Amino acid sequence: MNMVEVTDERQQSKVKWPLLPTLFAIIIAWCCGCNSAVAVADYLRRRHDFFSKVIVGFPRDGNISHDTVLRLLKTVKFSELEEFLKQFCSQVEHYAKISNSSDKRILSLDGQTPRALEYQPVEGAKCPQDRRIYNKLYFVTLYDSTNELALAQDEVADKENENKCCLRLLDLFSLEGSIITADALNTQRAIAEKIIEKGGEYCLALKGNHAKLCEAVERAFALEDDTMQPLLNPDILHDAEAELKTYTAPVENGHGRVEERQISVLPAAIIKNRVLGEWKKDCECLVKAVTVTYDKKYKVQKEPLVRYYLCSINPEDESIAETAYRAVRHHWHIETMHWLLDVDFGQDRMQVKSREYARNRILLDKLATNVLRTLQPKFSKKSEKFSLSRLKDELRDVPSLAVEGLAAYCRTDKTES
Image 1 (cartoon, rainbow, N blue to C red):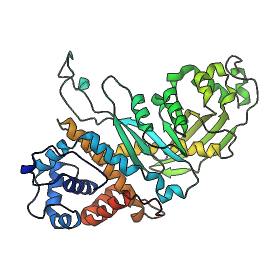
Image 2: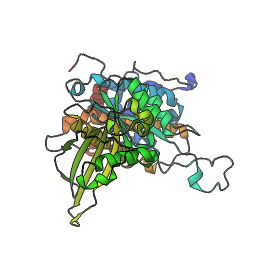
Image 3: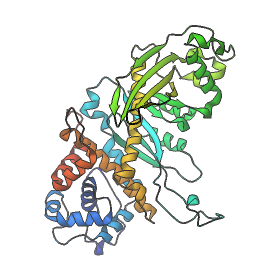
Image 4: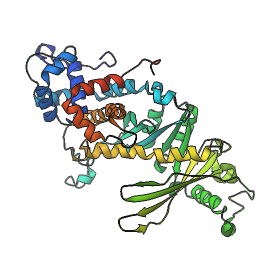
């Protein structure tokens, strides 16, 4: 509890449930799958004796009501609870599974908004009954895709886009030894420069929002096929041979699909500086990712999915293609987290009127997924990863496991392995 300071604005003479002990109890209940005020209150009532023993200051008499839980989650300031997450994750680089690994850590940036939230109509809107014009909560998350932990989140303000949130998030942590991935929306020079300034590398998706550069990258890879030589454009590409490095990933067989992935890498110098523009400062290589999918149920092979990326890693690195594959593939982990939040934690079904409660609930969901990920290896086998939904059921029956996971997640001993 010493890791966080949260302002308590309640009238202290009327306070029966102290803020910090109760907040920690709520976090533990959240990890056990209790993702509403009613569910938390019921769980704390059933496990009252346990919580009064393990949490210092937790009241020994009486049961908390769901209204009290709701008021507490509305009372906590979002900015202070956000600091709670940052302090937890500031030690993530000291986790043994990172420090003992020679691979670079993959950090991913992406935005998400819960679909079901409804609030007051936007002022001046022509049709107040239209849900599409309501203000939505929109968050950008910085996610450690290597260890599957949410590091921090930032809310997109009115008249703002994801890019400014990404810059604020990148300023929070050291990016040494990390590769930052993002979708095409965030493939912007300001973000790339911030990543380089913080000591990291980037692998950013390239699509039609950079039309000329995307066309040049497509032509560069097409030239590797002799039949595509007419595509050489002297105004775009240098007429010189470039070393192509490739990596073919092991075939993935699951979810009714067979997927084959191949990564190709070319030095960015093959494209003329006039076309690269500002990217010539730090973009070292171009990445092409091809995914071929065979649907076993319908016995149909789908059209290959081709994606392109700009990357700042030195193309002379012998393992550049495999490193690029890890960056491209691991970016999907943040999408998996969004799916978990939407489905397992019910964010897409969350219908509340209080924006403060919604903000804090979304942050609690991410804290809970981090604690569950910390515990997951303990229950998993080499052949099968223990699902988070099953893990929540385990913790619900044995809440001491959630306390253990929270303690492991908060560990700040940098020398511990």
